[in-house]
Length: 331
Image 1 (spheres, rainbow, N blue to C red):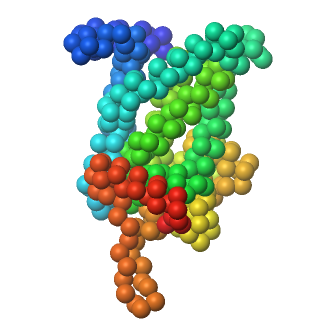
Image 2: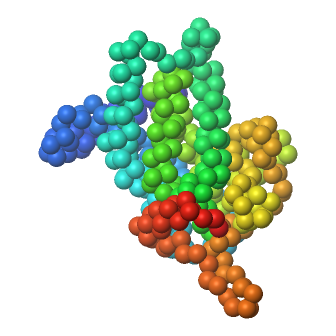
Image 3: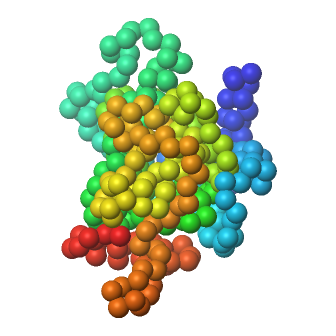
Protein backbone atom coordinates (compact mmCIF):
# COMPACT_ATOMS: atom_id res chain seq x y z
CA UNK A 1 0.00 0.00 0.00
CA UNK A 2 2.75 2.45 1.03
CA UNK A 3 4.89 1.48 -1.97
CA UNK A 4 1.90 1.99 -4.25
CA UNK A 5 1.48 5.51 -2.86
CA UNK A 6 5.20 6.26 -3.29
CA UNK A 7 5.11 5.02 -6.89
CA UNK A 8 2.03 7.10 -7.68
CA UNK A 9 3.62 10.16 -6.11
CA UNK A 10 6.76 9.65 -8.19
CA UNK A 11 4.70 9.42 -11.39
CA UNK A 12 2.81 12.62 -10.47
CA UNK A 13 6.07 14.43 -9.67
CA UNK A 14 7.60 13.40 -13.00
CA UNK A 15 4.52 14.49 -14.97
CA UNK A 16 4.28 17.86 -13.20
CA UNK A 17 7.97 18.54 -13.71
CA UNK A 18 8.08 17.59 -17.38
CA UNK A 19 4.77 19.22 -18.30
CA UNK A 20 4.90 22.44 -16.29
CA UNK A 21 8.02 23.15 -14.23
CA UNK A 22 10.77 22.24 -16.70
CA UNK A 23 9.37 24.34 -19.58
CA UNK A 24 9.02 27.32 -17.23
CA UNK A 25 12.58 26.85 -15.98
CA UNK A 26 14.04 26.93 -19.50
CA UNK A 27 11.84 29.78 -20.68
CA UNK A 28 12.96 31.84 -17.66
CA UNK A 29 16.66 31.21 -18.32
CA UNK A 30 17.23 29.07 -15.23
CA UNK A 31 18.16 25.86 -17.01
CA UNK A 32 21.22 25.46 -14.78
CA UNK A 33 18.86 24.78 -11.87
CA UNK A 34 17.03 21.88 -13.48
CA UNK A 35 18.07 19.35 -10.83
CA UNK A 36 17.09 21.65 -7.97
CA UNK A 37 13.81 22.38 -9.74
CA UNK A 38 13.00 18.67 -9.82
CA UNK A 39 13.53 18.52 -6.04
CA UNK A 40 11.43 21.66 -5.67
CA UNK A 41 8.63 19.96 -7.61
CA UNK A 42 8.53 17.32 -4.88
CA UNK A 43 8.07 19.99 -2.20
CA UNK A 44 5.41 21.71 -4.32
CA UNK A 45 3.43 18.50 -4.77
CA UNK A 46 3.69 17.65 -1.07
CA UNK A 47 2.43 21.14 -0.22
CA UNK A 48 -0.60 20.69 -2.47
CA UNK A 49 -1.35 17.32 -0.86
CA UNK A 50 -1.06 18.87 2.61
CA UNK A 51 -3.48 21.67 1.72
CA UNK A 52 -6.00 19.14 0.42
CA UNK A 53 -5.67 17.05 3.60
CA UNK A 54 -6.17 20.10 5.83
CA UNK A 55 -9.30 21.11 3.93
CA UNK A 56 -10.76 17.62 4.03
CA UNK A 57 -10.00 16.77 7.69
CA UNK A 58 -9.28 19.82 9.86
CA UNK A 59 -11.60 22.40 8.33
CA UNK A 60 -14.74 20.31 9.05
CA UNK A 61 -13.46 19.65 12.59
CA UNK A 62 -13.15 23.39 13.21
CA UNK A 63 -16.77 23.83 12.15
CA UNK A 64 -17.93 20.90 14.28
CA UNK A 65 -15.89 21.43 17.49
CA UNK A 66 -14.71 25.07 17.66
CA UNK A 67 -12.65 26.12 20.67
CA UNK A 68 -13.79 29.74 20.17
CA UNK A 69 -16.11 31.65 17.88
CA UNK A 70 -14.17 33.25 15.03
CA UNK A 71 -14.63 37.01 15.37
CA UNK A 72 -12.37 38.08 12.50
CA UNK A 73 -12.73 35.98 9.37
CA UNK A 74 -10.41 38.34 7.51
CA UNK A 75 -7.59 37.44 9.90
CA UNK A 76 -8.21 33.74 9.27
CA UNK A 77 -8.18 34.32 5.53
CA UNK A 78 -4.85 36.13 5.90
CA UNK A 79 -3.44 33.07 7.67
CA UNK A 80 -4.59 30.95 4.74
CA UNK A 81 -2.58 33.21 2.43
CA UNK A 82 0.48 32.56 4.62
CA UNK A 83 -0.09 28.81 4.34
CA UNK A 84 -0.40 28.88 0.54
CA UNK A 85 2.69 31.07 0.20
CA UNK A 86 4.65 28.89 2.60
CA UNK A 87 3.76 25.48 1.24
CA UNK A 88 3.29 26.03 -2.48
CA UNK A 89 4.39 29.60 -3.19
CA UNK A 90 6.79 32.32 -2.08
CA UNK A 91 8.62 30.44 0.64
CA UNK A 92 9.14 27.46 -1.67
CA UNK A 93 10.85 29.84 -4.12
CA UNK A 94 13.09 31.14 -1.32
CA UNK A 95 14.02 27.57 -0.44
CA UNK A 96 14.69 26.82 -4.10
CA UNK A 97 17.06 29.73 -4.65
CA UNK A 98 18.75 29.93 -1.23
CA UNK A 99 18.51 27.07 1.23
CA UNK A 100 18.74 24.08 -1.13
CA UNK A 101 21.84 25.37 -2.99
CA UNK A 102 23.39 26.39 0.34
CA UNK A 103 22.93 22.92 1.83
CA UNK A 104 24.13 21.20 -1.33
CA UNK A 105 27.25 23.39 -1.45
CA UNK A 106 27.99 22.77 2.21
CA UNK A 107 27.58 19.01 1.77
CA UNK A 108 29.97 19.17 -1.20
CA UNK A 109 32.59 21.05 0.82
CA UNK A 110 32.36 18.50 3.62
CA UNK A 111 32.87 15.64 1.16
CA UNK A 112 35.90 17.35 -0.38
CA UNK A 113 37.43 17.68 3.09
CA UNK A 114 36.58 14.01 3.73
CA UNK A 115 34.19 15.00 6.51
CA UNK A 116 31.10 12.82 6.63
CA UNK A 117 27.97 13.54 8.69
CA UNK A 118 27.38 11.34 11.69
CA UNK A 119 24.30 9.22 11.10
CA UNK A 120 22.42 6.49 12.89
CA UNK A 121 23.89 3.80 10.67
CA UNK A 122 27.33 4.69 12.07
CA UNK A 123 26.28 3.77 15.61
CA UNK A 124 23.60 1.21 14.81
CA UNK A 125 24.45 -0.85 11.72
CA UNK A 126 21.44 -2.61 10.26
CA UNK A 127 18.86 -0.27 11.85
CA UNK A 128 15.52 -0.52 10.06
CA UNK A 129 14.23 2.46 8.02
CA UNK A 130 11.23 2.83 10.36
CA UNK A 131 13.42 2.89 13.49
CA UNK A 132 15.85 5.37 11.97
CA UNK A 133 12.94 7.58 10.88
CA UNK A 134 11.53 7.65 14.42
CA UNK A 135 14.92 8.43 15.96
CA UNK A 136 15.57 11.25 13.51
CA UNK A 137 12.06 12.51 14.32
CA UNK A 138 12.92 12.69 18.04
CA UNK A 139 16.36 14.27 17.53
CA UNK A 140 15.10 16.97 15.17
CA UNK A 141 12.22 17.76 17.50
CA UNK A 142 14.68 18.21 20.39
CA UNK A 143 16.60 20.86 18.43
CA UNK A 144 13.35 22.46 17.27
CA UNK A 145 12.28 22.82 20.91
CA UNK A 146 15.39 24.87 21.67
CA UNK A 147 14.99 26.98 18.54
CA UNK A 148 11.42 27.76 19.54
CA UNK A 149 12.35 28.50 23.12
CA UNK A 150 15.16 30.83 22.00
CA UNK A 151 12.67 32.85 19.92
CA UNK A 152 10.91 33.64 23.21
CA UNK A 153 14.09 34.60 25.09
CA UNK A 154 15.78 37.26 22.95
CA UNK A 155 14.11 40.61 22.39
CA UNK A 156 14.96 40.98 18.70
CA UNK A 157 13.81 37.44 17.96
CA UNK A 158 10.55 37.90 19.84
CA UNK A 159 9.97 41.00 17.71
CA UNK A 160 9.73 38.67 14.70
CA UNK A 161 8.12 35.68 16.37
CA UNK A 162 5.43 37.76 18.09
CA UNK A 163 3.74 38.05 14.68
CA UNK A 164 2.91 34.35 14.99
CA UNK A 165 1.38 34.94 18.44
CA UNK A 166 -0.63 38.01 17.47
CA UNK A 167 -3.47 35.94 15.99
CA UNK A 168 -6.46 36.30 18.34
CA UNK A 169 -8.51 33.91 16.19
CA UNK A 170 -6.09 30.99 16.09
CA UNK A 171 -6.98 28.46 13.40
CA UNK A 172 -5.59 25.59 11.35
CA UNK A 173 -3.74 28.01 9.02
CA UNK A 174 -2.02 29.91 11.85
CA UNK A 175 1.03 27.64 11.96
CA UNK A 176 2.44 29.40 8.87
CA UNK A 177 1.69 32.93 10.12
CA UNK A 178 5.37 33.78 10.59
CA UNK A 179 7.81 36.45 9.57
CA UNK A 180 9.71 35.37 6.45
CA UNK A 181 13.05 36.18 8.09
CA UNK A 182 12.17 33.92 11.03
CA UNK A 183 11.17 31.15 8.61
CA UNK A 184 14.44 31.44 6.68
CA UNK A 185 16.50 31.34 9.89
CA UNK A 186 14.64 28.25 11.05
CA UNK A 187 14.96 26.61 7.64
CA UNK A 188 18.74 27.06 7.68
CA UNK A 189 18.99 25.90 11.31
CA UNK A 190 16.94 22.74 10.83
CA UNK A 191 18.63 21.99 7.50
CA UNK A 192 22.06 22.23 9.11
CA UNK A 193 21.00 19.95 11.95
CA UNK A 194 19.60 17.40 9.49
CA UNK A 195 22.81 17.56 7.45
CA UNK A 196 24.98 17.24 10.55
CA UNK A 197 23.24 14.08 11.80
CA UNK A 198 22.98 12.51 8.35
CA UNK A 199 19.22 12.50 7.75
CA UNK A 200 18.64 10.96 4.28
CA UNK A 201 17.02 13.49 1.90
CA UNK A 202 13.98 11.27 1.31
CA UNK A 203 13.37 10.89 5.04
CA UNK A 204 13.86 14.62 5.65
CA UNK A 205 11.10 15.49 3.17
CA UNK A 206 8.71 13.12 4.95
CA UNK A 207 9.78 14.34 8.40
CA UNK A 208 9.08 17.96 7.44
CA UNK A 209 5.70 17.08 5.92
CA UNK A 210 4.52 15.11 8.97
CA UNK A 211 5.72 17.89 11.27
CA UNK A 212 3.81 20.52 9.31
CA UNK A 213 0.59 18.50 9.34
CA UNK A 214 0.82 17.92 13.10
CA UNK A 215 1.51 21.61 13.72
CA UNK A 216 -1.54 22.57 11.67
CA UNK A 217 -3.58 20.31 13.95
CA UNK A 218 -2.06 21.98 17.04
CA UNK A 219 -3.13 25.43 15.86
CA UNK A 220 -6.59 24.37 14.73
CA UNK A 221 -9.58 26.03 16.35
CA UNK A 222 -10.84 22.74 17.76
CA UNK A 223 -11.88 21.75 21.27
CA UNK A 224 -9.71 18.63 21.28
CA UNK A 225 -7.22 17.17 23.73
CA UNK A 226 -5.50 13.78 23.93
CA UNK A 227 -6.28 12.81 27.53
CA UNK A 228 -3.99 12.69 30.54
CA UNK A 229 -1.49 10.30 28.94
CA UNK A 230 -1.82 11.44 25.33
CA UNK A 231 -1.18 15.08 26.27
CA UNK A 232 2.25 13.99 27.49
CA UNK A 233 3.05 12.04 24.35
CA UNK A 234 2.08 14.45 21.57
CA UNK A 235 1.33 18.18 21.53
CA UNK A 236 -2.44 18.62 21.27
CA UNK A 237 -4.52 21.65 20.21
CA UNK A 238 -5.33 22.39 23.87
CA UNK A 239 -1.71 22.05 25.02
CA UNK A 240 -0.39 24.31 22.27
CA UNK A 241 -3.21 26.80 22.75
CA UNK A 242 -1.87 27.40 26.24
CA UNK A 243 1.45 28.39 24.62
CA UNK A 244 -0.49 31.09 22.74
CA UNK A 245 -2.41 32.20 25.84
CA UNK A 246 -2.37 35.94 26.59
CA UNK A 247 0.01 36.79 29.42
CA UNK A 248 0.87 33.14 30.10
CA UNK A 249 2.10 31.17 27.11
CA UNK A 250 4.75 33.60 25.94
CA UNK A 251 5.52 35.51 29.12
CA UNK A 252 7.05 34.53 32.44
CA UNK A 253 4.28 34.05 34.99
CA UNK A 254 2.22 36.82 33.43
CA UNK A 255 4.70 39.53 34.40
CA UNK A 256 5.32 40.80 30.88
CA UNK A 257 8.90 39.46 30.67
CA UNK A 258 9.97 37.02 27.98
CA UNK A 259 9.61 33.33 28.72
CA UNK A 260 6.42 31.29 28.80
CA UNK A 261 5.49 27.63 28.60
CA UNK A 262 4.72 24.72 26.26
CA UNK A 263 7.52 25.35 23.76
CA UNK A 264 7.51 21.74 22.53
CA UNK A 265 6.93 21.56 18.79
CA UNK A 266 5.73 17.95 18.64
CA UNK A 267 6.77 16.04 21.76
CA UNK A 268 5.83 17.46 25.21
CA UNK A 269 8.60 15.38 26.80
CA UNK A 270 11.05 18.29 26.28
CA UNK A 271 8.77 20.66 28.23
CA UNK A 272 8.50 18.05 30.97
CA UNK A 273 12.27 17.49 31.18
CA UNK A 274 13.16 21.20 31.10
CA UNK A 275 10.26 22.30 33.32
CA UNK A 276 8.36 24.44 30.84
CA UNK A 277 5.19 22.32 30.65
CA UNK A 278 1.75 23.67 31.58
CA UNK A 279 -1.01 21.04 31.40
CA UNK A 280 -3.81 23.32 32.62
CA UNK A 281 -7.01 21.83 31.10
CA UNK A 282 -8.24 25.11 29.62
CA UNK A 283 -8.81 26.41 26.10
CA UNK A 284 -7.31 29.85 26.62
CA UNK A 285 -7.85 33.07 24.67
CA UNK A 286 -4.91 33.77 22.36
CA UNK A 287 -2.94 36.86 21.39
CA UNK A 288 -0.24 39.18 22.73
CA UNK A 289 -0.83 41.33 25.80
CA UNK A 290 0.48 44.42 24.02
CA UNK A 291 -2.28 44.25 21.41
CA UNK A 292 -4.88 45.26 23.96
CA UNK A 293 -5.56 48.83 25.18
CA UNK A 294 -4.24 49.84 28.61
CA UNK A 295 -5.27 52.53 31.07
CA UNK A 296 -2.54 54.94 32.21
CA UNK A 297 -2.35 56.66 35.59
CA UNK A 298 -4.44 59.55 34.31
CA UNK A 299 -7.23 57.15 33.46
CA UNK A 300 -6.76 57.55 29.71
CA UNK A 301 -6.93 54.56 27.35
CA UNK A 302 -3.71 53.84 25.47
CA UNK A 303 -4.28 51.93 22.21
CA UNK A 304 -2.63 48.54 21.84
CA UNK A 305 0.20 47.84 19.45
CA UNK A 306 -0.72 47.40 15.79
CA UNK A 307 0.50 44.10 14.30
CA UNK A 308 -0.97 44.80 10.87
CA UNK A 309 -3.88 43.35 8.93
CA UNK A 310 -2.38 42.10 5.68
CA UNK A 311 0.70 40.09 4.76
CA UNK A 312 3.00 42.95 3.77
CA UNK A 313 2.02 45.23 6.65
CA UNK A 314 2.63 42.38 9.12
CA UNK A 315 6.04 41.67 7.58
CA UNK A 316 7.05 45.35 7.72
CA UNK A 317 5.84 45.86 11.28
CA UNK A 318 7.69 42.69 12.31
CA UNK A 319 10.98 44.18 11.11
CA UNK A 320 10.20 47.43 12.94
CA UNK A 321 9.51 45.50 16.17
CA UNK A 322 12.73 43.56 15.77
CA UNK A 323 14.85 46.72 15.67
CA UNK A 324 12.77 48.41 18.36
CA UNK A 325 13.04 45.42 20.70
CA UNK A 326 16.79 45.33 20.24
CA UNK A 327 16.84 48.59 22.15
CA UNK A 328 14.05 48.19 24.65
CA UNK A 329 11.52 45.96 26.39
CA UNK A 330 9.01 44.02 24.28
CA UNK A 331 5.28 43.67 24.99
